[in-house]
Image (cartoon, rainbow, N blue to C red):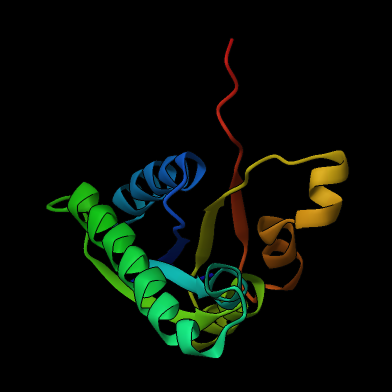
Length: 150
């Protein structure tokens, strides 16, 4: 794997686990001289939930969720400022599918992302974006676990 001018993709969702993943990705990018690509997927299922499925509210809800995604990415850019080159991408769709698609387009050396560490019923119902990405992504995926209290 050629790491000259490498890119590391970091999906961010505003959670503590994605913040931890950004810290890990920042250290990795710093060590490798790589660029970070911070991304956020505007989850269509979240838009549908917020809008209650009402067509007239879908567009308004989508704008709100996109604004939240932009804020998450702007916060991420501020955290990495002056350490490594970074850019952002925001896409609308479903997290696993669109992270996989974006990784296929960008061809990053790595994807670094957090996991919420769900197990049992919650995982069966909610699924795992990190697991789905790890199974399908065209690049190695480094999954950062949640911080556990000692």
